[in-house]
Amino acid sequence: MNGRATIIGTGSYLPKRILTNTELEKIVKTSDEWITTRTGIKSRRIAGAGEETSVMAAQAALKAMEMADVSGPELDMIIVGTMTSDMVMPSCACLVQKEIVAENAFAFDVSAACSGFLYAMEIADRYVKNAPEMKVLVIGAETLSARVNWQDRNTCVLFGDGAGACVVTGSEAEDGLLASQLYSDGGLWQLLSLDVHPRRYCPGIDYGTIPDRDSFCDGSAINMVGKDVFKYAVREMGNAVEKLFIKEGITVDDIDLLIPHQANIRILKSLAERLNLSFDKVYTTIQKYGNSSAASLPIALDEANREGRLQKGDLLLFSVFGGGFTWGVVLWRW
Ligand code: UT7
Image 1 (cartoon, rainbow, N blue to C red):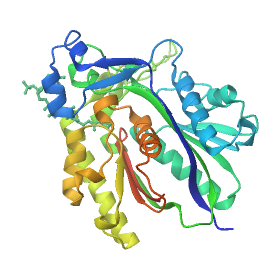
Image 2 (image 1 turned 120 degrees about the horizontal axis):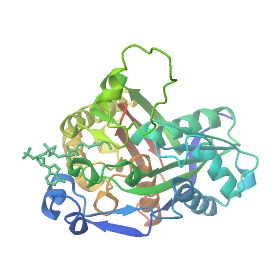
Image 3 (image 1 turned 180 degrees about the horizontal axis):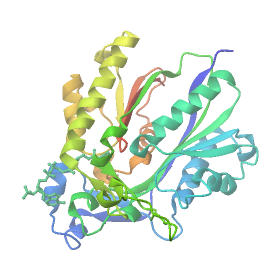
């Protein structure tokens, strides 16, 4: 059997607390008008007590498992794309495993910032190619509200929390992951970073010069050079899609729906324009949820799925871009 990853269930979890632009006007010097026109965001969800990253991830997972009719013990592997795990150790995936009682699964996190979900999906695909009977939980989950500086209007208005999940297995049929291409460029890391773990130095040891990045990062919150990230995101996602189209011998007209990472409505409009893709073929949730990093694509996928937007046989395009830089595209037959 020559399998490829196919999705048999989707789920998502959004925190209860809705933070509107109007509320943000009382926190930083900003306006609903600025946020709406520059980003498309009207509100975002903020995780509260009992809504840690692993808890949201497990809730999203349970919904996906219910749709897939797969129980915890039937799962073989759990991969969570996240940069905001509850703890550095254990992984978020291990905490999810405990929560959903998936005693037969091995579990680990993937750290690829906003691209984490697609990186995780690509790994799942490689596994089920060799073992199509495997049942894999692929999750994107983030609590970015805990990692922004709430006095920095350049970043705090952008991000939100949540989780999205898919149950994936191998398929011999025509559906599933048709093609993918992932990219990274660590040389541009300074344009988007988050250094939350304070370094501890052993007293009495001469370390010489403290590395560059200690002075660059403020040590607790997301740093972003927004304009540059914007430019690279449009250019690199556009290049990646065009290369994939050429490799797969398809054109933009073959695409039924683009489900992208949700960072900025203007990025999505620029990308659609560059690809010559009608914007009504771009699925957006950014208005409601802001940028929830690795969670944004699987949340959008679950919403599109549950509202009946995805028809069997549709050709979907997933595209992501995030810190690292990391980015990638996936072509998917629904
Ligand atoms: O998840 C993947 C990674 N993230 C992204 O892809 C985000 C990419 N970048 C962006 O989405 C946009 O660059 C931003 C939304 C972050 C910023 O939009 P921009 O159009 O690039 O604005 P800017 O940074 O050039 O700032 C324009 C002005 C500045 O004022 P001056 O210098 O012109 O007086 C900013 O200080 O807007 C000001 N500004 C704000 N004003 C009101 C920045 N943030 C705010 C704010 N409210 N929240």
